[in-house]
Image (cartoon, rainbow, N blue to C red):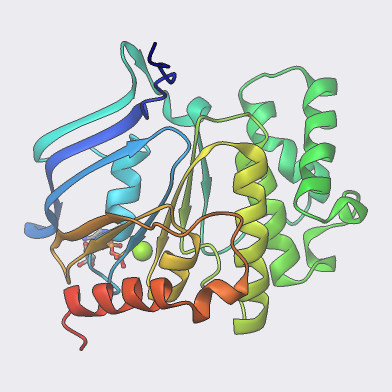
Length: 262
Ligand code: ADP
Ligand code: MG
């Protein structure tokens, strides 16, 4: 008798097909994205890497359901169940964007509050998330009392508080110094593995994209086209030793090649 192993086919939760996006401002047209095709499966950590101005933020906004598109198709959500931008998506930006008059815990609770989720349960969840991102002791502080890295941890907790299906991050560590950034990379892997959510991370850091991503999408200089898209076959949990491995070097060279940087 042959044993049949259970099939756990990955479930796509977002799919972009030949997406095009044009900005129209003051009678001028800017083609921000010319042709991007990308499928993201549930539980993936997808890095989107490309040069500045190539259209990464635009792609992320399309994934968030915040932009109309000018060509192609976008399918967000599973089956008939469509995502609702505020409810099902959490976002982290380059700047933490915390409200300076609110304590950290109240900043983290904000999305849950806006969605009218029960206050007591949300507060508990916010506290748990602050512990998960490693700043439980700062819950009652104000943003100015925290370092940039700690503020960004709070912003990550805020992106998770309403239990979104998808977390989108736009160069979340871009404003941090190099050492804090490396630490946050490790933290982010831990948070992703613990939260078991689908993460999309936009970055212009090639090493960061490979180190974090289960998959990596490479965009060309603008208007964005998909230059490459591959699975990063390096097992998790990953630690900094990965960066000196042959496999890691191979992936980094592959991206350099795609971006004509060799
Ligand atoms: P990236 O995030 O990779 O730096 P963006 O997606 O922000 O790139 O921008 C892609 C291109 O679209 C750039 O040329 C940018 O100037 C242009 N762009 C972005 N947002 C707007 C907008 N609201 N109106 C007009 N042009 C825009
Ligand atoms: Mg951007």
